Image (tube, rainbow, N blue to C red; front, side, top):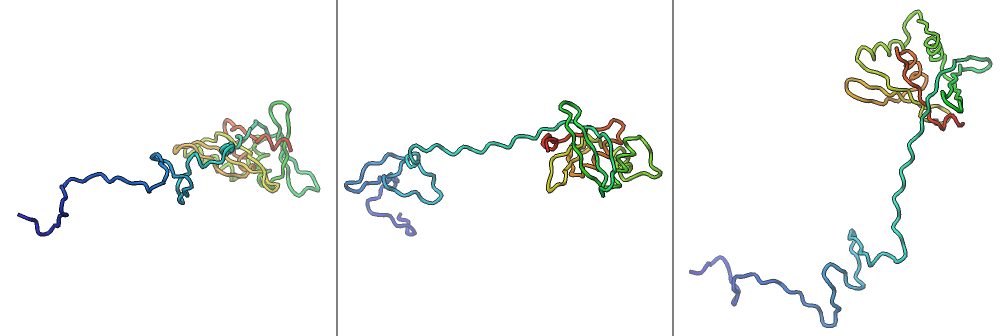
Length: 199
């Protein structure tokens, strides 16, 4: 019985035979996986090794930027000398060559740091006192204060903290970070990027 819905070519055996590609007369034999001589590489196609210009080495990957070096510094004092409009904080490297770093800060921050250096309690809690109390209440500890660099004459800083949710690095003004670090029962280390001390 013949299936009316399908046509069958005369002489077909019902078995798929492999298709054999035939080269045009005079065309050179090209092994599998290689492009024929003079063939153009299609867009998005990777060029073969034969197409790499001879004598040219591959471009090396750029080296990662070196990690910044930090040194431990301590607060010497905060001074306010006329005619300067701002107080100045003085930091000193704790190891040789004992380099220093001075930079201006706001009057409220200078007073807060001076209270902490002299272990005095202000009449009312400052913002930094409140911050330290709040961090203790939620179980957050200050790991370190870092002075990370300078931008347009402004010293940059960050507060490294560890809390119930893990480790966090918070952007902050150096004066705020220092005022908080000095108020802790065990003062957190103040770290300064070495390049700042070479200014």
